[in-house]
Each structure stands twice: as C-alpha cells, then as structure tokens.
Amino acid sequence: AQSVTQPDIHITVSEGASLELRCNYSYGATPYLFWYVQSPGQGLQLLLKYFSGDTLVQGIKGFEAEFKRSQSSFNLRKPSVHWSDAAEYFCAVGTLNTGNQFYFGTGTSLTVIP
Amino acid sequence: GAGVSQSPSNKVTEKGKDVELRCDPISGHTALYWYRQSLGQGLEFLIYFQGNSAPDKSGLPSDRFSAERTGGSVSTLTIQRTQQEDSAVYLCASSLVWSTQETQYFGPGTRLLVL
View 1 (cartoon, each protein chain N blue to C red):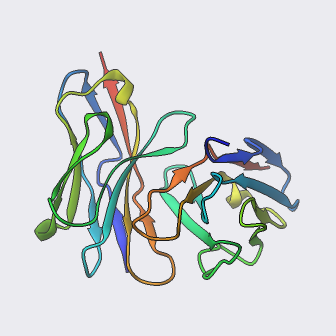
View 2 (tube, each protein chain N blue to C red; view 1 turned 180 degrees about the vertical axis):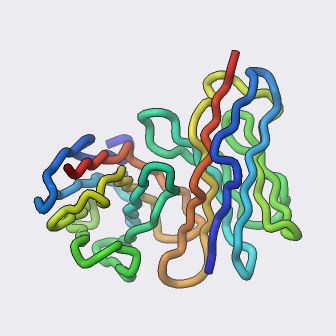
C-alpha cells in the first residue's frame, strides 16, 4: 500500500540556521510529490511540487526539495530559516492509481528559536 | 470568493447528534476534496468530487459519513450520529480540475468537537 513517512514529528532550529525536513514514500512508481505548509490558524498552502525532470525543485518562501528515486525520498530544505517559517509541514503523494490517490504524511512541526 | 471557505469554523456537538459541514470552493474549480485531520495524525483523505460526482467513496470512515456537492460548487459533509472519535479538523480543498498533479487549495477547516 502507498504511504508517506515523515520521521520527524517535531524539529527545533535557530533562526538563520539551515533546515531539512525528511519525507519518504512507498509507491511502485514515481508519484507526484508535494510539500504543503500549515501555519497556525491557516489552511494548507503549497510550497512546491515535483512531477518529473530536474530532481531539485524550487518553491516559494526560499524552500527547495530534492527527489531521490534510489531513496524514495523528497526532503525539503531551506538554507536559512526565518521565524515566520514556524509551522506544520506536510509531505504528500499523488499516485496514478484509481481510488484514493492522495496520501499525506503525519507532518513535521517546526519551531524556530531566536 | 478569493479562496476556499468553510463553515462553521468550530462546531461543538453532543454524541449522537448529526452535523453538517459546508465547503465553498474557489469559483471555477471543478474538483473538491474532503480530508480529516486528527490530533497527531496526518491528513486522512475522505472523498473527492469531480463536478457533482464522487467516483470513489471508499475513503469515508463509516456509513455515518456522507457528502454531496450540488451545482458543481458548494459541498456538504454530513456526519450522522456523531461519535467522540469523529472529533477532528475537517479540511476542504479544491483544484481547477481533478488530477493528481493539480495543486489543491485548502480552506481553514472546521474544528469539530463531539462531547
């Protein structure tokens, strides 16, 4: 069965430090991959997505993610974190099968300390 | 409207009561999705609509859950005979068309508490 794993439930980083949020998926083929961010009291917002081509994807707010087929991973990165990046981050997978086609990870909560 | 809206934003109900949750998608979006977000859990995909049609209802947790969409716009998620385990945030999203490549635009959610 398809699944999305975000192994880090909570991460704390200092403002200005680099960030990497991990995401692994289980699927027989290359799925469509997404990262969404949920700020407190807000709906989820798309940060970036990957379908094919260049495995390094640039998104909004200075985020990027790299698809690694060999590791079934799609990790999210940011070189320098800002206090406003504190939020919940969700990795998601869109598959090509019929039926329930979207799978979200359990999320990683990011705290940014001054 | 400019974004996806959901109402009510919060709902407290007693066990056994029925509740209706409403979603207004972005104008012109033909696809609409319902998710459930429980504490400490990821988003659980419940159902999606292509226009007014829901091709696959297998994601609904039980037969107490139903959803409909009329006029290709507003959707209602109904939970009958609510149970405490139904307490969660119910999120609605819409996209221009149905595709697993499409960006989904999410509403702020309805927080449901069943006492």
